[in-house]
Amino acid sequence: MTPFGEPASEEHSASQLDTAALLATAGGYLDGFTYVGHGHVFANAMTGNVVLLAIDIIGKDWRDSLRHLLPIIAFFLGVSAAKALLWSQWKILRWPRRVLLICEIAAFTGLSFLPQHISDFWITISIAFIASAQVETFRKVHQASFNSTFTTGNLRTLSASIFDWFVGNHNEQNRQQIVDFAVICLLFFLGAAAGALLVQRFGNHALWGAILLLALALWRICPAGGTKLAPAAD
Image (cartoon, rainbow, N blue to C red; front, side):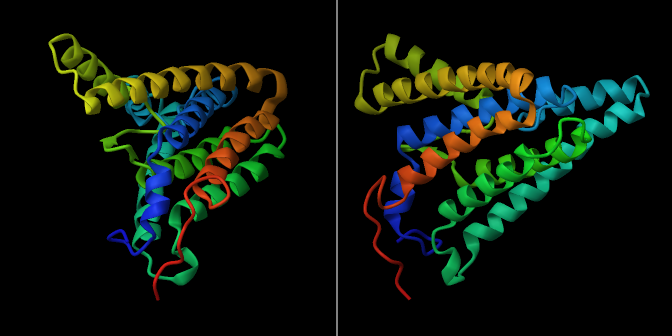
């Protein structure tokens, strides 16, 4: 059992490379989708929003500053919601990662049917909230910390691991980190490219691509797709 009272097997499945890779692809996809299709706002990458917010404030562009401030606020709220989900002792939430992915899929399904002319506010705020909850809930690939919705830290880990390899640190953990983070960074990039491309062609229906990726991640951590889970003790 984990400290939160959930079966360790779900935590194990959630930290495998295939699960992390699917989530990272979805993270890049959503950033490409929102930046190109919804007002040049990063729904996942808060660093970009903080920089753009600062530029808007310096330029006294208050309307644009609000477009970048609101996703930051939604990010804070999403992290808090995820923390509450992980700490919950309710029996219905004994598998919080599954609950989160189901909520993500349901939310994106609803957003995908919104008309394209709807205010960008509803799209970017919703995705920022959901993405931050995902960041807080899925934090490990094998034994290393990773981020599924932005990639600066992942690139740092990959760079450090490659350097360590070249100076003679050829242990299994370092090799695993090079493989894991190379895959994660590459798929984040490809996901961003796909999201940016498909939103131009399909509008909000392009969210179906993210839904598919999240559904595969859900399948991976459920009994049919991953390690067989034992029920939590009462």
